[in-house]
Image 1 (cartoon, rainbow, N blue to C red):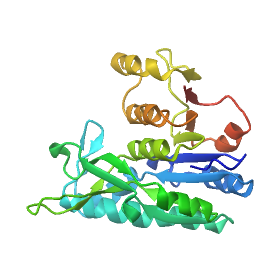
Image 2 (cartoon, one colour; image 1 turned 30 degrees about the vertical axis):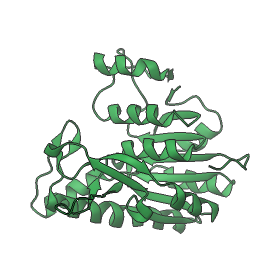
Image 3 (cartoon, rainbow, N blue to C red; image 1 turned 90 degrees about the vertical axis):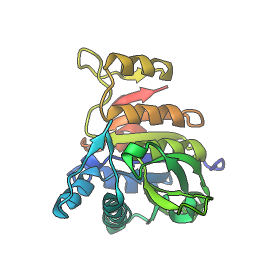
Image 4 (cartoon, one colour; image 1 turned 30 degrees about the horizontal axis):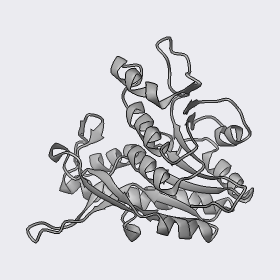
Length: 264
């Protein structure tokens, strides 16, 4: 994909933890688009989902860092991710002069998935990525803003095809790999991967990631991010974890600043 331009095509994952924060992420994305780069955005929204679940009297539950998603929870996940969060991001981009189209992994069957773990309910593992709708949106000059939900297609007459909730980091890695973008960037609420002395690891080879997970140096929400980076690096030149709370983080990164953690 996108072999014809000197400008970069990059995929940005905006973590739910920085949605609505007073950073410059949206402004940075629009600035890069106006410079001729081709952004693709995948977003989370976990905190917003939990807030709406609580309003409906539902208690958010998690297993190994993933949201347990029963039928009632799935309705809220779908409505929140593909509706409220997605359209607010599109609005914010357009409101400052950018061009964006909001979609989900269900649209055009961009993401197909299988049940990850019956104990998690309607949570999916991505099996197939259809890049064509994303490519068409980018070629038309718009930023695709993608909500991480997927289609679970079932051939059996005894079961129905359903929508599945997909971890946003995992979806990002799978989409980045299929699109073969120049770089994939995870914007989160930490400065990067920290070593055992709480210092930022500026760069690390992907082969060393599993050891850091086993030792507990990489833990919690950082685990799916680094695993997604490893997936993406099969077809992507670089993977970067940046502090999305920091003003101009994206612009500084594209200007060559040595910030965050690069996975090689």
